[in-house]
Image (tube, rainbow, N blue to C red):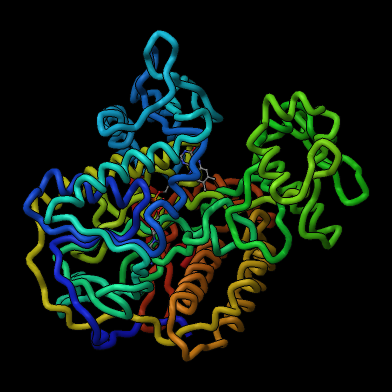
Length: 554
Ligand SMILES: Cc1cc2nc3c(=O)[nH]c(=O)nc-3n(C[C@H](O)[C@H](O)[C@H](O)COP(=O)(O)OP(=O)(O)OC[C@H]3O[C@@H](n4cnc5c(N)ncnc54)[C@H](O)[C@@H]3O)c2cc1C
């Protein structure tokens, strides 16, 4: 059963720090650097479960959005973000994002990030869906995340030369340590590899910042890397923190289908390929987008993703195909060299073969609920980046706002800690899962979630997902280890996502219910999920500008 339980802290090695930051993507590294800058005396420990650049950040392509260009303004960026968020963004959070965003990007440039520029010198800014102005700064064409990650990690390396900043790779945060008064007092870690920290140990800290990224690995197809198992969100729930907006997950309509044994980070096949004339076909080779929407294969992402899922369900298949053979070698080489290369690396030649594609989980708009300073509902626990729900994205993220959110809210967290760094508290308990689950549940869990709680949702499908998760939750495991912890976290998150999706009986933003196809005013608000001794609970909270009306949808 999924439930919270307090256990005595695990024995093992111990380290003390003022702040422990978990995760080394844009959010974690920027937080660590900003704290190092604002509180130079503070001892910071950054831990990350794999290599430093193994998160989503380095895979970000399009760019980072900020009102930096002539004719643009934070107000316009605010308006575009609120439109995408479908009525449930927290306007105060969006205002912080868009007004502090331009300076945050400038600081990133000062730190060494090299963005693409016009021949005359100014930043080259482009537009993306939903942005009414040119405001997407990019690097290396479509390699923005790689450049941001490079620049941040170089700065981290430099800062780590000082005595006050330390980094441990291959350190999987398992759970939070809590003081007797419920405050966060550190984390337990499982450290792999050789060295003084091997095995399970603990970091005692005055404040914990979770920056563990998204949870695309809950689904069988995802653009997210393997590390995106939502650990931070799971351990925050176990520590009593609230999660919000978990039902709002963006799906990308076409990633390369790599076979049923692939695990995540499936390469994107960009819309631009359809823009050049490629089209989707079913198993028999028939086009299925014609007649579904006036733009056919170029219909909006959600329309295309839903149509693909319907064909897959009708055919009982796990992918459809994209036909781009007629584009010819010259177009493929000139326009899509990266996609051509990644298809060929995976044994498919788009010049002569159909490309197998499938919709994939791409971005989690919801997460650990925070205020405008990144504080969660657990004192001494902050969250930043994709794992957090600051209220910026509402029901749908505006493209390229996520890297910016990581930067802006990292600096807000550092400022908050500079104002008020809690005293060290002695850990009284940790909140390990009641029982670990067997890693073998992960594949069936991912398939269940993609089939029943992915792009297309209905009351019936979600109930089947819930029942399937209960059965998978019975497969215990007595061998603790990274795989078992991650499997247990994925199960908790999948259960929380399904619970939120069942509650929201409407279609809004990226949450599409076949049985409730319209957006409904009564649902203009947030499903808040918590984990208590009796399991997951949920309440509905109306959006901030509405009269409070608690309890609906619970
Ligand atoms: C293919 C792709 C393209 C994208 N394109 C864009 C774009 O153009 N613009 C944009 O704004 N956004 C884009 N995004 C989204 C954006 O990249 C992410 O939202 C952002 O990078 C998240 O940053 P983060 O620091 O929160 O998490 P991540 O970069 O994912 O980092 C999370 C870190 O936490 C670590 N971690 C996780 N669990 C644990 C644990 N238990 N213990 C210790 N460490 C842990 C991971 O190893 C990792 O270091 C894209 C995402 C993908 C996947």
